[in-house]
Picture 1 (cartoon, rainbow, N blue to C red):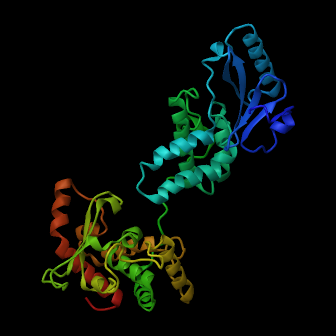
Picture 2: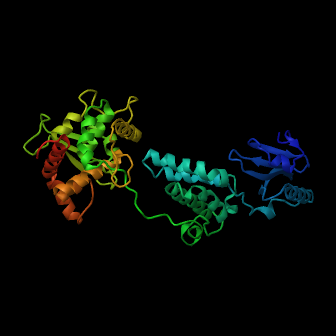
Picture 3: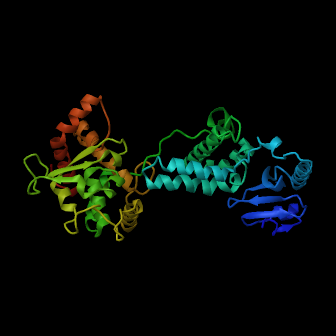
Length: 410
């Protein structure tokens, strides 16, 4: 059946946008080109030897030209006609996979390492968007430092963080190729002493999220309370607890343990919200005392299973939901809510800085604040002590923080 697609191949035809499949030359040697879904093209030859059909790999196109492939195919046919197995002298020939083909394998390996769905998607999307157009169809042993430089340069200045991650992901794919002996070392995507010579060093200055200024906090809080919807309640809880956005959006009912009766006790709080290590940036379990204002923000309707703050589709709120809410608040206010240093509109991720500024200016307990922010400080023994014994002090701190936001004395 493999002879049905025979035609006289030409360089022009081979360079056209061919669909995946096998295209046979009419030279009578069984020569054909195998076009894969990724767009890579490699030469093969089907030939009969002693009653058996053999398939020989002749290299990738265009590294091996049409003329060279025809020459090799003719030599193989001549050897077979003389009783010599044409496959024997070519047993060491390896069909070199393309970058796109190996990337699919490496992506599968890397995705199994991540629990975060966003990280899984980013690995593939960055490679497909920026690397595949240039590197995708190339056999990995043909990729040079110049090729990688051409991929990175267009986004290195304006999307430095993305470009840096992309470089690391390209390096991982080519590391795999080297280990599998598809290409020799060194890896052309390594940074030190290699691409570091050709591309500007990434600035080390840390970019902080635009934060709500303390002088605007009470005005912002008053406006937020007038907003309806689950997103507004989630943002209020984020502000009250100085939590990260993802910690609030991923909050689950099974993480909440209220005391009997669900009322505030003499300790100053009504229960404990235990955030598992898997949801924390430091991968360490973190406890938060549930104060009366926090309790009021928890939904009182629903089956109280799964997520506390659900979107209309029943999934977790997106990061964009809270960001868009703060953006609308900024745009609807005549003065707006601007970060003091960057003059950019404040965002949810900057609310933790507002809490930190308030603690610093009012002289409240640094240890309690750091624990509330889920920051590490001191040694392991010291941190373990504070983690268990500052829940009461932290609940008092959060109560005073709430009073400040409300504009009350104390």
